[in-house]
Image (cartoon, rainbow, N blue to C red; front, side, top):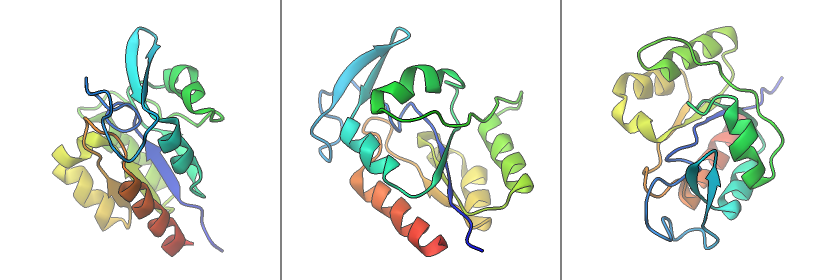
Length: 157
């Protein structure tokens, strides 16, 4: 039986390029800034469409928590994603990922700009057969990173 790949998705630095540049990543030509709950979200609907075209199950893994469904999701026209709860740990995302993987060791992709600073989390992900995607915070996801995700999904299926 083939398992579906799970994608765990951060917001800031991934979907929201944290920058003052008008065009953070040349891959997408439709960048715009929208205020969400008072925060500027620098995003590309084209990037969001490319991401959602992936044949995978998405979950939020972000400090936005349930507010990602309320404020971020509508920017891309997506349906709601499950939200990984915020446990009270030092870097809660790593602990949350370990708990989810222990409960269901399906193939997974972890997308978070902070992963490049979290060597233990990166190593753990790779050791458990997952794919790490850590976009540059100021540019967000690129076409190459989304293609790497698509290749991982094709291989896992």
